[in-house]
Image (cartoon, rainbow, N blue to C red; front, side, top):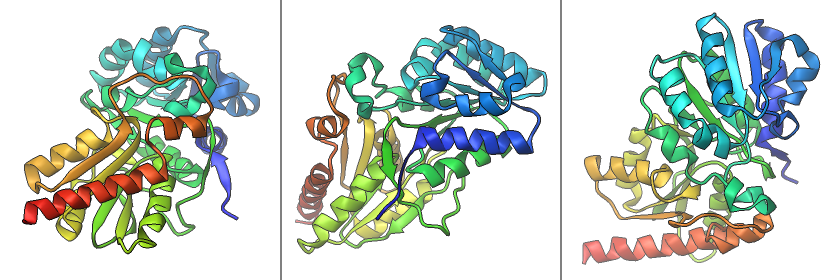
Length: 317
């Protein structure tokens, strides 16, 4: 049986591990530590944990000050608040001076579920990706989250790491080694490549298996770093397969699909279909049901692959 763990839980565990290794690590939260899982760190290191309250803008400014003082701040709240309410402070106080602040936001995407559209961040990757100096990472599972937190702690500069509320299957093997800016080639494929991020990697792997039963050889790439994007992996997949599908629990505008489209347009034009939330807000519902409602299921990805294969054939005719 494939193990399942929520990436926010893995983040909480990673913080505790990191706190034992580094005395400069401090953690800030905006009164949501039980949900973001920073409470795990607070329990072990109460003198290095700060609950700023429901004041996300102040939290970003405080983190910037701590970074200037030589600390390594990890800042957490829900993704919709970290990237929306506090966007100006992230831009002006953290990214503009290129400070070493790590923003790890939870409850991203539509699988927040019953919290509704107001709390479902589906624009966060886009608005973080556009800020200079910012690195954007969306881990696919618990083990990758653990490695990503270790990696961003060693990296100098602002980082945004997106975690989720629900438990997700483990997709990264025991020998997998996460590197910022490097794609994880799960399977190469011949007919089309599915480039997925976050929880969509597991759905992409299911789609690959569905397509295999129909004689379609689709590869799967885990693109956990959205910025800097592994352009070499994108172009290589396009040259090998001649058709690309992107899959993300995010708006199709400005996220992974947009980033891949930019690379293809400039370096190796190839047919592309983007799977993600169309230009609309989320809505309340059970997480799995919302994945189907917004066209994010494995079956939807498989349909997108068939669509891109039709485009591929039409370009050759």
